[in-house]
Length: 77
Image 1: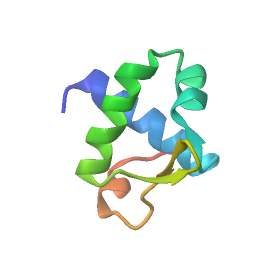
Image 2: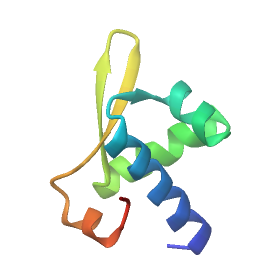
Image 3: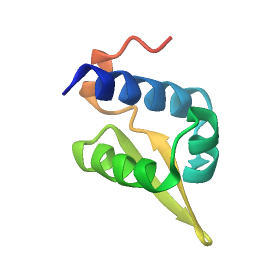
């Protein structure tokens, strides 16, 4: 993983650990990022097991996948 993507992944995981159940809209605002790009990036992170999603009504909300061993790679405290 390239360094800039690794940093982005760390930031996303940290946000989701501290405040689980955030929508793409909320995350995009906090990260000052394009929602379309972030949606694709979150889908990739979900496929890799870093995050989980759940559909609540029309919104899809995201959570850090705390059961993943991969998260131990990140010091997000």
